[in-house]
Amino acid sequence: MDTNILCGTLVRLVALEPPAVAEAINRWDRDSEFRRLLDSEPANQYSVKKLIDLITKEQEQELRSEYTFGIQTLDGDRLIGFTDLEGDIFPHGEAFVGIGIGERNFWGKGYGTDAMKVILRFAFDELNLRRVALDTFEYNPRAIHSYEKAGFVHEGRAREYLYREGRRWDLIFMGILREEWLTKDTG
Image (cartoon, rainbow, N blue to C red; front, side, top):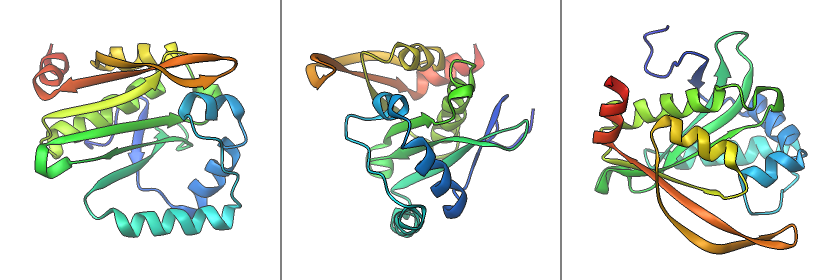
């Protein structure tokens, strides 16, 4: 395994290069299942040029309040997704993590779990955070299982948060503390 803090056993986290990531996001946003699992908002189908402009503008505004990475396979250097940390990173030692694996043929094979472990290592070992949180919808059991494998615990839920596919779904809140990460990482 690479000794780089941003490398796992299957993936590495890389800087987002606007042209490459814009093309990938443009493709992933046309996948209704990916959008359904990722977010409650309707997909915005932007052109690649518009996505490049949006990504570049976002990168210029980040300045230590957000850390965004592409997820790239170690075998083949293929961009398969993205992850980010955002929130009250320095005042309170907390961050909210987001992750998305856009390439379907990498779903359910451990790439998301590996990427989550890498971003958590960065959060706790490099940024010295105290807590990392996330949320997901109850209709995404694959993600919930992946987060549990990475060490997250259930902290609560917003009942009937989202109306989709003719019914109401809960939003599930999960989190992990630095001490829990250290125990899991060394145990």
